[in-house]
Length: 483
Image (tube, rainbow, N blue to C red; front, side):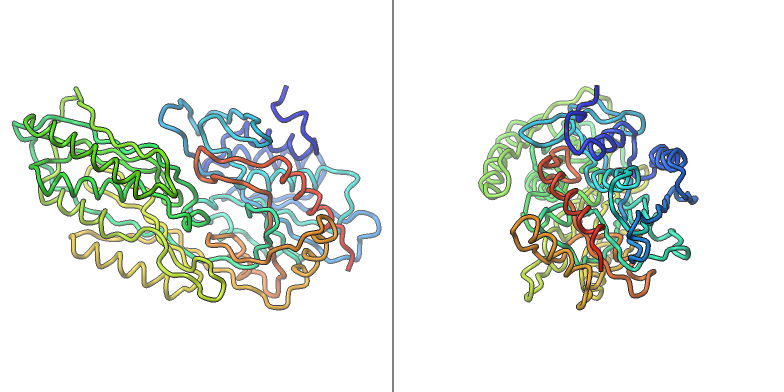
């Protein structure tokens, strides 16, 4: 028995649970892509699958809709894979363990993948149905959205006829997104100078846990604590007073998620340990006080280790490591004065130690291309001052708003008719594949909407069941609208 099998509409929740049973993290979408292809084959629908595992499925119009404009529906099939530290889960092999709680769907200790699995489920349910009115449908399922939109960039649009484009990757019911920011991934690579562990070096694990994390775009305005930035601050306090070394640092997992945890292997003098522990107690108290409006459980701990350690970073490498953590930008950089929305931001989402480098992974976002470049220039300067280098990948364009949008007006009219509420027209401080498709498809009329999904990109991710139902009803009204 499926966890969601008693929920209505059955087809939407059936397909969502099917999706959750198939591992589909970024770069691991082949099985889900093949599932979608197999679905199309069984239904006798036209499909094509490309080398990136993107899938296009076409379904002809129902009776009476043959002359209506073709509608393109689009969602991405990859998910962000994050889990709590105490959870045993292999995202390469294991399906998700779903839970229904307080009217919401969540996963047991991991991300849920409602971003964008709910959108995929909507599309499959429409393609599967025999009794839903619609014009010709072109359904695009893309890959690698969460790591730079590689699928959308590679997708061939030459055989598309649609002039109306509905992206189903938004996460707040009652909002209609008509534009989004662009961005890139800018990594800093700090060379490591390795040394032998000093005779006095006692290994201790410094850990920061308990942060809320969240999506580095849509949650950045909440001003939540960033575990990597806190680690830099704590290391500075210790480094300024005591002679320490560092052997390893690890914080966060994805550049597009606000990191919830970070840890550093320290080498300390035995005589300094108790004083450092007292310092950490005071810092822990101060941090919880500073972030009391946005966090409620910041925990800083120092634990002895039994592992034998042979090498550590040089003192100069430690100094540069701390400097980068302190100086690299995190949070809101600029606001749009006209909309009062976040315009530009940066997130140091992951820090990891490799053999030759410490790598600092950053997501830069802006709805103004020149400001995005300016943030990247600042990071270049930080890298230069510390003898590091930068690498830029995963660049994606902004999606500019269309002033006279027919589909926008249709959505406003139908939403008010359904729910007696005005539909809020907005922009999103996150990347949507709309930016890429709007550049490829000239004169396209494009919007994005979706149900209430909270905690995306974190194990706190939840999909509101009632909202999933309402957006399904709304989507059916939109595709059945006759011009």
